[in-house]
Amino acid sequence: MSTNVVSESLISTLPGSTYVDEAVFRAEQERIFEQMWFCAVRAGDLDKPGAYRTVQIGRESIIITRNRKHGIRAFYNICRHRGVKLCMEETGEANRSFQCPYHAWTYDFDGKLIAAPNLTKMPDIDRQEYGLVTIPVRE
Image 1 (spheres, rainbow, N blue to C red):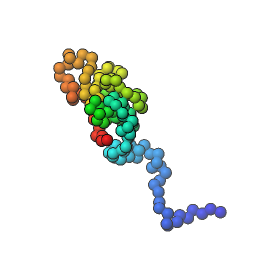
Image 2 (cartoon, rainbow, N blue to C red):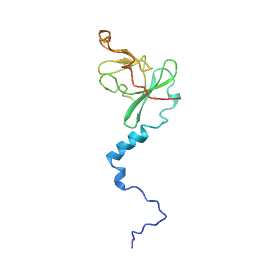
Image 3 (cartoon, helix red, strand yellow):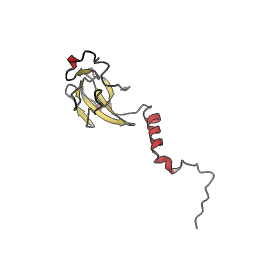
Image 4 (cartoon, one colour):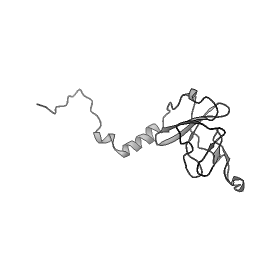
């Protein structure tokens, strides 16, 4: 024999639909996961300039790398030209730069745009303005 009596000492939980609701998920991503600090990678895993890891934080793919001065840098993992993902692998080592596989826009390890086809013919393009979008990071 079963009863549906709920003890007053139990803490009530959210309705089950909350755990599968897309709107709730999007709100949690935006308001919680994309607003907080996270331990994303171990600094020791980025042992030299160009070593990188990609991580998913909230809805965003992030590149975390070590620059030539051995500092840690983080950027959105998208090219500023057409929004293509720059690094497809979870971990790797870039020799000299990050290069977009679509139109070959190239960024140094500090996120600065250093090359693009016909860039010299586009004097209105500010290399700093079109660099990778940085994300706060600390070691």
